[in-house]
Amino acid sequence: MLTVDLLLRAATFALAIAAAVAIVLRPVRHAATGYAAFAVAGIGAFVVASAPGAYAALGLAAFGFNAWCLATPVAVWLLSRVLFSENPPPAALDLAFAGALVVITMAGDYGRFQLGPLAGEPQVAAGLLVAGRVVAVALLAAACANAIAHWRADLVEQRRRVRAAFVAVIGTVFVGAATSELVFGKAGAPIEVLVAAHSGLLALAFVLLQFVARGGVEALMPAERPQPHPAQLAIVRNDAQEAALARRVRESMERERLWKRERLGIAELAAILGAQEHQLRRAINRRLGYRNFNDFLHDYRLREAVARLADPAQAHLPVLSIALDCGYGSIGPFNRAFKSRFGETPTHHRARMLPASARSTASQETA
Image 1 (cartoon, rainbow, N blue to C red):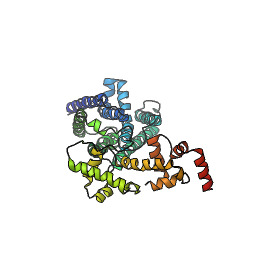
Image 2: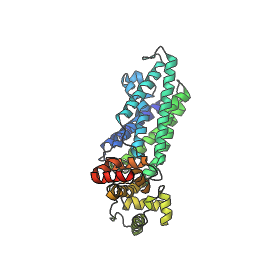
Image 3: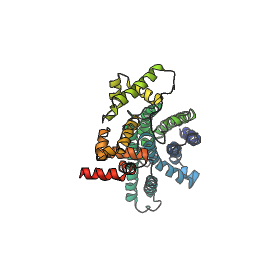
Image 4: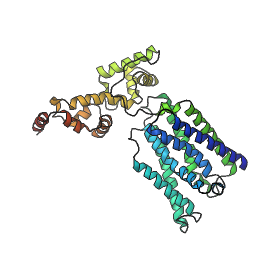
């Protein structure tokens, strides 16, 4: 059984590294590329770092695999932020956090065996190890939350399916890897459990490699910046019904100004148009060129806001009033969406666009 386990580990490592290299070599480059490759290769790092006799066989290189394995939950969390949420790209502080997690967890891990700076403090080492594992699980849970949070607003069919797969994989494979030692103790899991688990990892690595080879990564990578205007109704597919629905969407949004409804969602819009949700998602994605329903709404709302902020006749209106009238529930989401799209706050945009005389008159009228 031990030989079978080692063979499974070797095959899993080879496939995981191959999948990670394939991700890096894909023609589409994005902020998510590095995190995806790091996380996938982390599967290979785990099977090496946890193998019996790894330190005797690899020497100092085993420490590198262990560090890679410990940093993988952070990479998974950062990957989920880039792929599934509207947060800005991760900052250097996030990477520093990953380094701190690795240092603390490794110190606790080796300290239990009277190694490293905590060799004489086994209780402190054990506490740090548990704390590191808890933080790792919390990061993986946050990654799953990111994948679930905007699921309904996602208009890309393949990415919606990947969200579910992402949660399933993170909830089983990565959480299982992060907690296995806490469950089974220093001795580790029985060989029968290891063989079953590593068979599953081998299958996962194979599926990931096939997914990358077939161009699945490109479908997941979000656009670097949302389109400033809705795309023209160009013929993407020979589907007259889909094109007609897209046209109805455009006409209804412009004529009835549905985007002004604060909590307008894909389900409500589908009900208004008398269409199925999946049909509406396809029409907006394939015909109008949007990957996310929130970006679709932001286009209408922000174009209206820009026009009103630059209108001298509305210079007396507070920015909050304009935000609320454009469908935003509060000033925070409006400011974030505006700055993400135009690179400046609404207040700065108004000050730049309106002549000083209009601003002065507006201030006097308000007073």
